[in-house]
Length: 51
Image (cartoon, rainbow, N blue to C red; front, side):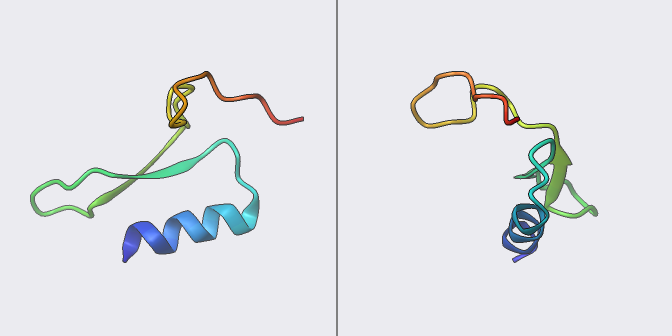
């Protein structure tokens, strides 16, 4: 639920420089905010920079 909420929030803000990723840690939140990886896309091509 936290991942879905933060992903939607960032999408609504059009925050291209930040993404929510699952990163469960004992005693911590299961979501981490980070810069997008250029290899994140399913087609394994580097992401295009937005202008």
